[in-house]
Image (cartoon, rainbow, N blue to C red; front, side):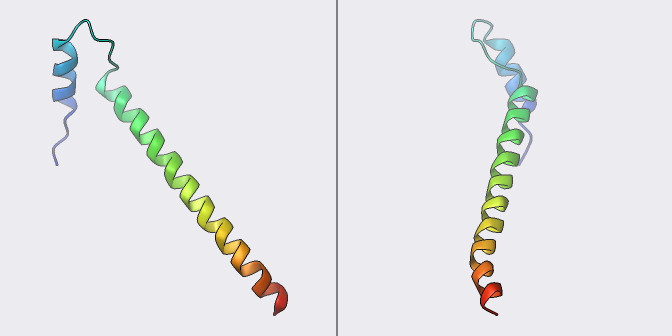
Length: 60
């Protein structure tokens, strides 16, 4: 999949009246959202593992 940054920059340049962020800012925000989601999924998995393993370890 090719990187559409140049096409986004060109689209932004062609529409001067539209309040758009630069392609780099959009990419950075997407990366931030992905990092946050991955962190939350990992933390959730660790929490579930702790809840499941806690009683097993206690009863052993």
